[in-house]
Image (cartoon, rainbow, N blue to C red; front, top):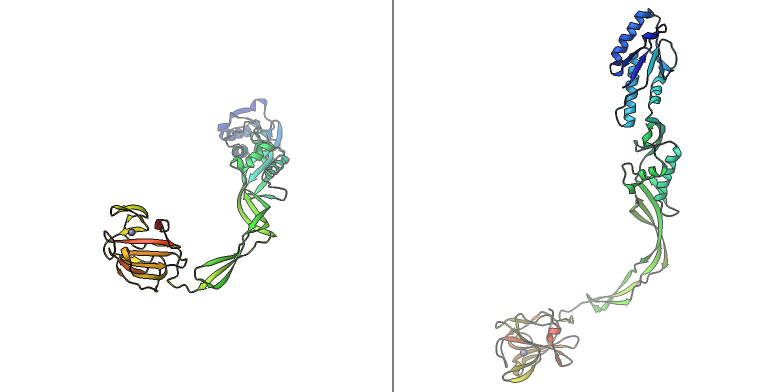
Length: 408
Ligand SMILES: [Zn+2]
């Protein structure tokens, strides 16, 4: 609890010193002053009171209320600085002697508060962040953080925040040293007053350069067909990027310089423009009919004896459509021994596909057919135990397993 010692007028006696509680200071002071004037009879000549703190005159006031107001203001200021309610506890004397400068009274009170002192205050975006006894502590801390976020010799580090230093009252307990302050500012530490640090650096590295394409039209190649004449080869370049980091994380990268160290080789491609007739082979087969496979390629027992099955049997309903498995030329269409009504088609690669036991043929020998074109209807002509298509693929006149060439 603070004590206010009041010494009344200049002619006061020793016993006129009165000690009052600070809480009732204003009312009591006023009453006491009036009593003092009445006692001494110097009311008219009195022009002001000298305010003394710890025996030293620090200013002049017109009344005790004025001292009260100053104290209240200082208490508010100090409470703001310290972050908790603070009460001035210094003994104050008012005397009739005029002296001092009244503008210094508040400063004098501030000086009595042991918890605060004039220090260098670091403000981040206008907000109080920390205080230090010397400006060098702050300067060194900022340099240390800058150093932490450098990336090589030619990198530049800047802050997106407004960083300012002021000289003012601050809590002594808050005073920091360089390393402590550097950690407060370092975003890696995640503190409330961490800076937003921008690092700009130029990075040079080797990078592949993709080759380009040169397309040459070729009227001897079918449409949709291409042939590579010269294989493309990637080149290399020394590339310099301007890279920006925020708090050590890359946020942008722009190429600013490039030296080709090895030229890429352009790929030259021949592109077919020749009209492609429908009957031209693709070289890949499609299924000639829908149905169920009742017999695969290979050896089997049939009609109470051994035989080798040279194709596959696809069974379905009478007159199920049969299509050409690939484009080509019909080289046989007619009745052929046990195969019944049969068609052979020769494809562009020399391979022949055979379709046996048909019920009806829709093409003639010498006719060109396209892949998927309807050529016959399924039947059971020739030596056959039911409606099915016997399908064969012959390479150099020898049958192969069709399952190895048909899509799954
Ligand atoms: Zn068969």
